[in-house]
Amino acid sequence: MAARAAKDSRVLTAVTDGIVAAVGELRDGFYSKGGAGCGFVVYPKKRLFARGEDILVCAPIDGAVTDILPQGGVEMRTGDGVSVRVLFGSEHRLSTQVGDVLLRGSELCVLRRDSAMISGAVAVLFPEPNEITELHVADGRKLCGDAAAFFKAAAVSP
Image (tube, rainbow, N blue to C red; front, side, top):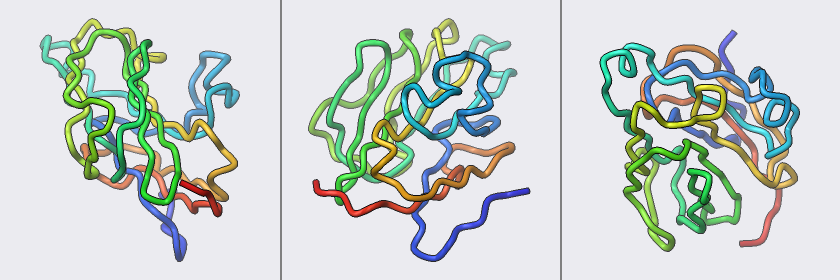
């Protein structure tokens, strides 16, 4: 069953073409248990990797880039202070830098086909779960930019 947007909810979009699932469905023992926050993952289309193509990863939300993570990721902060982390793996060509203000769908990086992703997926996480009060993941096949999750922000300070 697809997630529905509740009144006052906000959208996170799929960061690449593929299958969207709740992060709790990973079989890794850390991320699946909320070790890095709550959120969703996108398993990129297998045929892209099979053909040896690189994969474009885009911003899931409007916000400023606040950190480049050494393990292969970007942290963003929305205008009202909600942090969103995109983890994509070590083999990538970064397209942004700290301080950039991005719109949803803007290019974050290009993954090389041999990138060491989290259980084969790109993760979109809220590293500070207290910043949100609800999260509904819209599981299933998505194209980059399609609605992948809906959330309500708690009162946070920027």
